[in-house]
Length: 341
Image 1 (spheres, rainbow, N blue to C red):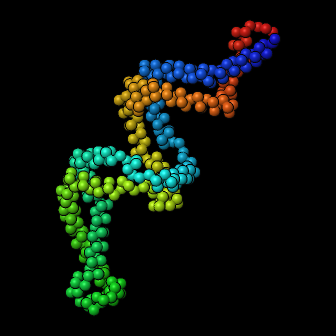
Image 2: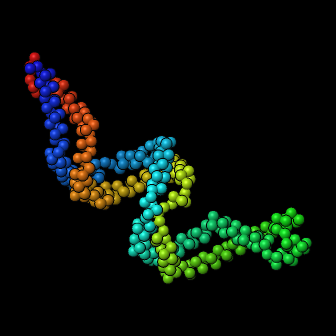
Image 3: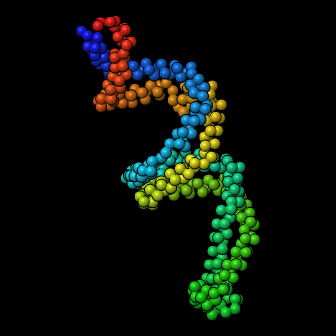
């Protein structure tokens, strides 16, 4: 038998042996042994021993910032999201079926306890230029509508009394400068008094949103929402959902290009490694709830299914053959076998 024939026979036997080693009870035992070996290694190996902070930082940046998101990703997400939103289970499931009332009450208690945070949020909201502008506009529109709809408010203005039975549009047509004068005076008044008005609003909110009032409001919210279905299908159309997803991805693409996000990723990785670099890999996995038993259970459940799928589709044999074949065609094999001419 020639050397090449021996090599072919040994290769086929070796491939068959490896295939059997990954399947059935033998494969299960091999997987258990691999988990044990890995876990022992993880218990004695620190993060710093495996990878340095610069490599982690560069990898995090590459994954978060550099990988290009395909244009059709939004359509894929939108299609799936729309199907999930319109599942019948959303109409059959109530809020209380997915949110436990005791958990909701714990959230209310937390809101009550975090009083200083609540105060800061109210103050920041009311001091926001956006809120101030919104409040000013609401006040203006309310006062304006009152003036033009209430006869007593404008009866004293010369020439307007006889127009009171007409609409505000008619008043504006007969006295074109009136609305401009009203707007100018009302806006001037609001601008000069907004700060004082908001200060009173802030004091009222801080005083009224005490523990008793918060709990009462929470009870009303729960009573109104607990038996409502989760479905939002009637509130949002597929095209609207898709536009929201498109916009969300556009926002993320824009954020990825900013120096700020890159800086946050760099700092996050560096601070994490500084704090946990000397922890073992087993300890780090434990921080997210993974221990040996969890790893073994998932390996026993998932790995055999994947391996069978690889075997049935021919990929497992191809992988094994590609790994073994170079040896049997190498000078190392020839030297080990001896010169057989």
